[in-house]
Length: 221
Image 1 (cartoon, helix red, strand yellow):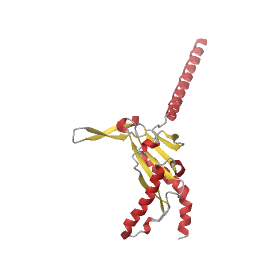
Image 2 (tube, rainbow, N blue to C red):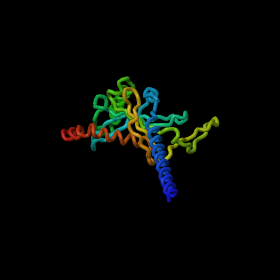
Image 3 (cartoon, rainbow, N blue to C red):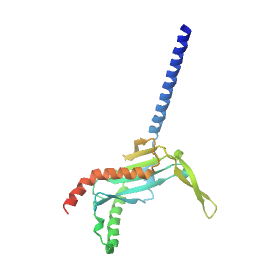
Image 4 (tube, one colour):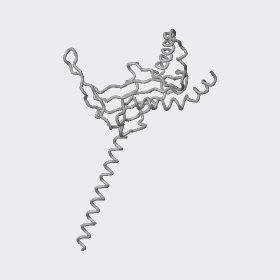
């Protein structure tokens, strides 16, 4: 009887020990994931100076512009990502109604939009970028990418086409004091691309930041 009790106790201890090791192992994986930081500098990402203007509609007639930029380093083993620069106020970006331009005024409209974009890009490339924008970056590590077909150049060189694996992590970073700070680790992205997370974030912040201002402007029209 004592031998049987001893075997049972030993088995329970062994199971408990394995469970603890398993929990410790899972915690280690999570800790390791959160401790890995994207270390490519903001200056490096923006050295091409090319930004894409994005438009967020605050109401039926009013909108505000922010900036986005892709980051593609999969060919060097550096993964890829999507960056957004959200204006903190209306210093460089403006709440405006571009629908007021008629079809004959599209040239004037484009000049107006380009002027706003140029001011935003100028500040986004300056050392004071954090004074004017909240900058977020959504990053997919190289290990979660795979070659999905490709093309062959005229000189016979193969150029692979990369895609991200479904149900893999995506990391959100925010620029703070010139450094990327990990602000969110999403362990399962489903099938959503990096830019989907970025644009959703921009939409939420811009609505909270400028939505009431846009409503007041609509009432005063």
